[in-house]
Image 1: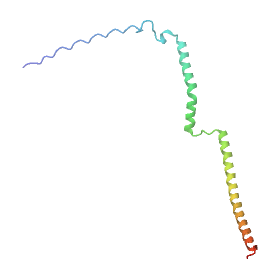
Image 2: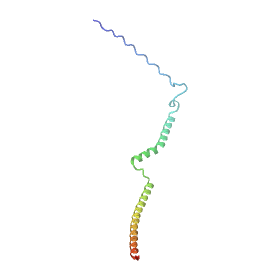
Image 3: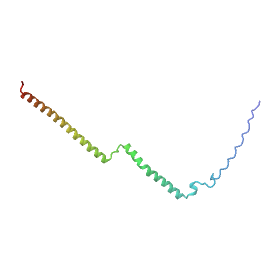
Image 4: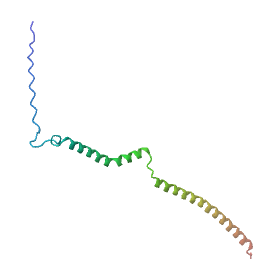
Length: 120
């Protein structure tokens, strides 16, 4: 009986050496050049600027979600306008009543004039 022959497993190649940093001569990343307190101040400054810029946007989105976008001055003006509309509607109904009365008076005067006119 013949046994199959298996070729031997080749050895693992060696790991290539890590390149020296920096990859470009004379260029180093900021965290290697600047002291840590300066880096912390930069990060805090960027966060503060982002908060200053984005705060009004997030506040507006929050108001829109809550549904209370109403300014008190605008609410007062809307209430005043509604009151004026109610007054105008009541005046409109009074005008309609006066118009009916005027029509009735005109009809009565027309009837009396027709009765008083001599017929030839």
